Length: 138
Length: 138
DNA sequence: CCTTGACTTGGAGTGCACTCCAAGTTTTAG
DNA sequence: CTAAAACTTGGAGTGCACTCCAAGTCAAGG
Image (cartoon, rainbow over the protein chains, first blue to last red):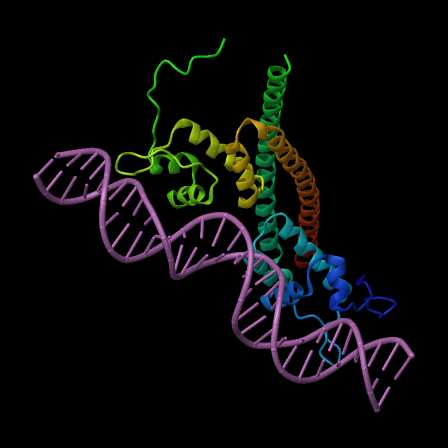
């Protein structure tokens, strides 16, 4: 039962500025990502201007997630290379994502710890402030 | 009832290498932090070598928490300046910490969101992998 | 057709947070 | 006292992830 490609071949085709607005990545960053190999070369008009398809956008959004969770450009490159290499790399990709996910979980735990300690510090300062006020106006 | 200062005036006095080992900050970074004004000038031996007191260490550990939760050096500087300016700046310091804490909570929420999405992606890949294996060995 | 704004490229420049270096001085173990 | 290890300084260098630039080409509205 191979799925047919689509009913409408009308691909969205967004300009770099539009994609920039959607993803909050600057147009410069979008070009940089492409040059760096994070994105496969996106389609062009006859005049060589970029036109992004919805698949490009979805991939960008996934990259953004990786970036926001602290993955380096280099690691994203590795992942992108595997993706470009096709279906035989899926288990490698899973391995990378699992690894990243584990690190992320650990990172979140550490942040929560630090958040608690910070709030303690704030409480401590608040007590100090209280004491001060009593001393000034006894 | 003012507490007396201490019974033993024997301050710990750690070398830069010892503090480096304890804090996991390189000796270079410790000097950099001092130059940058994150740490007040620490005590020196007659020969001008740094000797850190336990108060210095406690402050460093607090800075580390700020750093690990994503505070910039510049913001840490601001905080350090307030601290150095004395007790009248406590409410300002509270304001900074509250702000930072709020941002941190938000950041943690975003990371958790992303972690969920990542795990979805992993599951998706695992299903793909399953499908592949069935196709190869039907 | 023409103008205005959007887009192209390669490459240089930026900001942050360190990190390294050279040349000299101090501390410490024996 | 001596040799080796640890420390000092000012300043230069690094790596990352963009960000900006110049000079030119292309697209879309009137």
